[in-house]
Image (cartoon, rainbow, N blue to C red):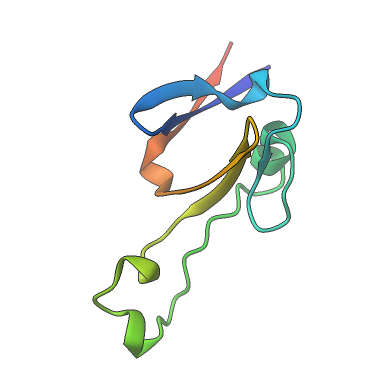
Length: 81
C-alpha cells in the first residue's frame, strides 16, 4: 500500500488517514490521485501576468480535514511498504 504524506502548515500528515481527503483538480482520493498520474497544476506556457507572482507557481490542491490547501508538489512524499 502507498501512503501519501504532505507538509501542511509545517506539519507532515498522512493524507490517507482522512477518508474525506481529496487531491488535484478532479478531487480524487490520495491513492487514486497517485495511481492516475498524480496531477499537478504546472502549465508549460505561463500567463505573462503570473510570471513573477506566487499565483503562477506549480501546486497541488488538497482538501484535508475540512480545509483546502494549495501546496507546492515538493511538499508531498509517497511511501511504499
